[in-house]
Length: 133
Image (cartoon, rainbow, N blue to C red):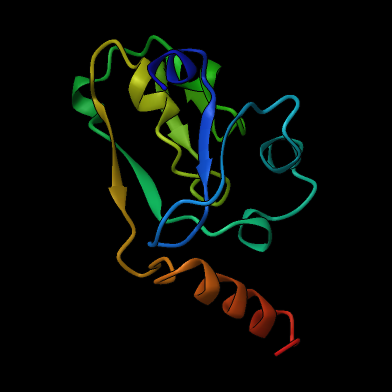
């Protein structure tokens, strides 16, 4: 897992709190889910639930741009040597936090968006959102 993080791959698992049934390490170039967000083809919230957000301690940022370079969905851009994060596209994957040499990026849980209790509950929620059940 740590090698995947260093390469900028996103750990993708089921969006449920129960036992993990699926896992993948995805990149922004070849993965359908991550890549389609990177290319801005589908709004993030239509494709995936995001349970984490990035927090940056800008006063301690060294302005190196490593986070902008590695972001798999291109949600970070450097403006005047400071990272600006587009929270509408950030997927909260934490790849930027792993690569930050100054250690000024952290990932926090979004309190307003909680994952379903189980894989079955996840699928029931998807069906309801699609008007199928």
